[in-house]
Image 1: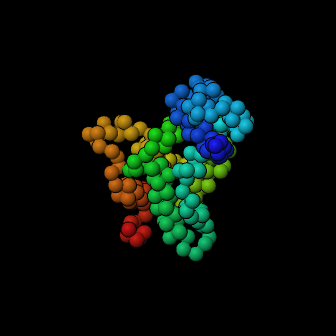
Image 2 (image 1 turned 45 degrees about the vertical axis):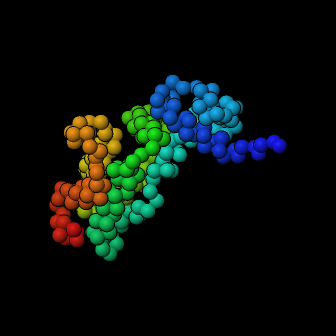
Image 3 (image 1 turned 90 degrees about the vertical axis):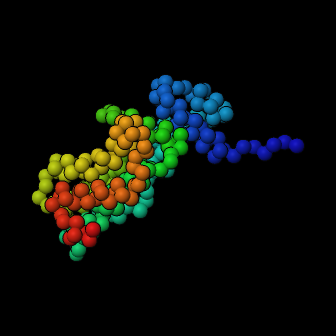
Length: 222
């Protein structure tokens, strides 16, 4: 009796997963289509069939990582002229911190694929000439940045756009730091995973940001 043909989606998923692991280890230029196909137990022709090229597969790896990691429940940017704009900005700021911590999987047990994608992402974020980031930014990151920036403009009116960028960095920076240099963080914590309590970390960063903005935690309902 003949075996059922393998679903195309299974082959496609295996190629993405194998490519994620290999691109993380060797970079885009350090691995070939045949090597990826062999690791995925697939015919190398399937790369062209599903993705068009190795570059298309790399784009699919980046997109799959973002789609898996990005939370969908971040509130829209608050409007400065709306009623209760400050309260909406405070709620939006807290949601941004919690959503970003969740997207980065801080305090979670992560899979090898998760770690591999984070390695690829860190490499791309560090490239000023990445051809992949503009479209990924438009789809996955720019909206979150504008949501945070809108909150900060309301909570600290009169800022220049450079100063808004500085403040966005002070909010997002610690979360990225904890995610992308875990080895250094563990040296500072005696080898313990960090953070052990993501909720406590988010609450602390929210409170710290309010104080930096000159907003009383009591006024914010903290």
